Amino acid sequence: MGNRIPGGTLSIKFSPPDISDLEISEVIDTLKSGWITTGPKTRQLEIEVTKFTKSAGAVCLNSATAGMEMVLRLFDIGPGDEVITTPYTYSATAAVILHVGATPVFADVGKDSFLIDPIDIENKITEKTKAIIPVDIAGYPCDYNEIYRIVNSNSKFKPKKDTLQEKLGRILVLDDAAHSIGSIYNGTPIGSVADFTSFSFHAVKNVTTSEGGVVTYNSYINEKLNGEEVYSNLKTLSLHGQSKDALAKTQLGSWEYDILFPGYKCNMTDLAASLGLVQLKRYGESLQNRREELFNLYVKCLSKNKKFILPHFYKDDTKSSSHLFLLRIDGYTEDDRNKLIEAMGEEGIPLNVHYKPLPLFTAYKNLGYKMEDYPNSFNQYRNQVTLPLHTLLTEDDIRYISDRLLKF
Image 1: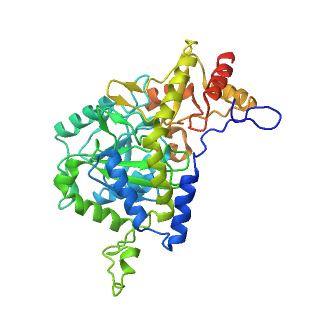
Image 2: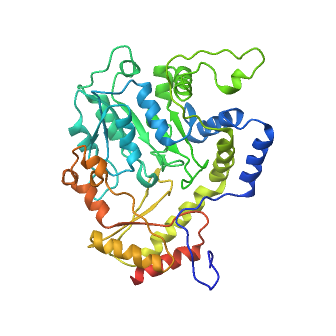
């Protein structure tokens, strides 16, 4: 059995990065190259992500959060506008809406679901709605067919003049895909489904650059809005509004540049991209399949107890990236769940919760959001625990975790 510490006791980590000598060698190569900020390796990672997701283009940034915010700014979404998202998510999803000055409007998740409810989305649309940010919780895609049916048939949309909103001609769909690199929706890779998709490469994600993220855009955006301009504008937004990046300015005689507008600072470095290049390659070759194997072993082991409400994140030609294993326990209260987390911790098994709905936090309470308005989200949260799921776990580790859960 793996992950033992002296004395024979298991010490299982919740979500450590899977770093091999290949990543280390690539980072050393970058350090020796003399170019460590945004440069050729960042561009190469953008190319590889575009291929992996079968999207029309990709822009690497320092976080998925920055990716979502840059897209909202690209579409001139700001004060007076509304953006619909889910309360069942990490704070970043709603925070970017607030950062640009717009108002988050929460649509509840579906009954017994972790995913935003398209029916509630439709109910929440007003003339102020400029974007929808669905969240692929744990890597399982939202119902994009229904979401697109809604935005394509909605007659309330009123874009600002002379903006990309007006050129697009409908509500923008921006996928918070922090969890879903490698996920598939109806046979199509996430990254080329929504208008824009923001992936996270944070240290705990399936593919990591330590800190980082990438935004992709699909073929519809590429054709409708000119993909080359979209790429260029996102790059400019992310680097102070400069007309040239650092690498371009180092070319002989090319020092001069312009500041086109006061932009932001959220570019990715080549050091980070070095990690990402190897991680993405290993993920496509073996790590993604390994996560799925471990996920399915949990399902097999835990199906022995009918109180366990198991996630079944694979259906037909739609599948999850197996980023998280979200377990719910029938009949459990918040207090029961918290006692279980404490007891499992004493066994050397770390459990987590994904997520505490945003209206339960002080920041969102102070903005006027009330948990009772989102009953489905609360019901998902109150008896939910997240089990360790990463590629450094062994099958014996999964059985050990499952056995302890079954005993409790």
